[in-house]
Amino acid sequence: MEGLVLKGFGEVVKTVTFRIRRYDPEKPDLPKYMEYKVPVQRGMTVLDGILYIKEHLDPTISARYSCRMGICGSCGMIVNGKEKLACQTQVLELNKDLIKLDPMGNYGIVKDLVPDLTKLFRNHEKVKPYIIREEDRPTAEYLQTPEQREQYAMFTDCIMCGLCLSACPTSAADELYLGPQALAQAYRYLSDNRDLGFYERLNVIDSKHGVWRCHFSGACSEVCPKGVDPALGIQLLKELATVNMFVKHKEKGAVKGPDRKSVTEIL
Amino acid sequence: MRESQIMFLQYMTGLLVLVFGSFHFLLISFLAPTSDKVLYSYGGTGYTHVLVGGTLYYTVVKAVYSTLIWGSIFELLLTVLVFHIFNGFRIILSEQFQGERTEKFITYSLLVIALIIFIWGSRTIVLMLSGGV
Image 1 (cartoon, helix red, strand yellow):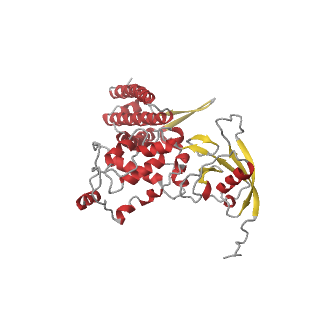
Image 2: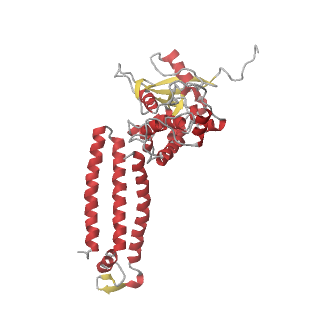
Image 3: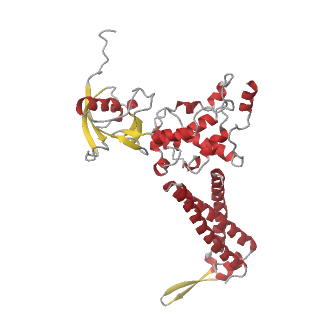
């Protein structure tokens, strides 16, 4: 392998201007945007560009990141007006001489490109994102067929990057709206045959700022970097809520259906 | 009421507005003057047209609107319209202004306005049914 060099790798292809939104609660006189010239190499991502600026041009710039490979969901931001993961966005693929970076919308800002994700985690917690069972301690494995897993498989891909909530127009107006991430996760657990928390969760999603506030703009599904379709999950939740609109909600329990019955019988 | 029940009513009334609204506009188009029912009279300063039988004459319109069937349809149209419009306002305002007290204020204020409009509209329909003014 020694001596093998990828053609064009390491060469500066062009210089791109990064226009970055600045915010520091301790420095109110900081300009709104600051521009940095970044020499771009082939394979360079927007996150690489930010790190280049931090290392060589301005160490005061702040961004959130961790894995650099689209798994952790930390580096969500608005790149040229659209929600993206900075580590998954190739600078050259944007095909622009100017890249405008803003922190995600519908959140507070901690500093520069770092959003305050309290709202995202608060909403996620509200929908009880875990398997709810009657028993305190499981005595055996909860069984599930591959077909039953398929019911919600797509929604397990959520990495909680928060891009969907940033793109959601309802979340922009309604501070209390649960948002696409939390609602999609509610559907993920409601459609899990091992879960018995149907009524508990339905009380949360079928509320004034729950599932019915979605106006189906579909922006959440469009920006999801993992191909999850939160808008679909929300529509399916609406169907569930409508079918059960006259059912008296209990504290705990599950919808009666062949899937859940079979699990109970197996156990 | 649970939000799903309210939203179910919202969608249903939306559909019913379409149905009863269509009846309403169909009726108007049946009553509208056709060329053979309009008399044109030319004077020194131009021409005026005069409506004759089967057209939008007040008495003709009143005769149609005074029937129990049409009165019922208009009452239903009024009911579904008032619900759909004011629940729509409630949704929009609740999204813009959150908070338990604020939302209660929005809901009850709109409920009062909706009731006033509903009663006023019903009064008109009942007056027309009982012979008009």
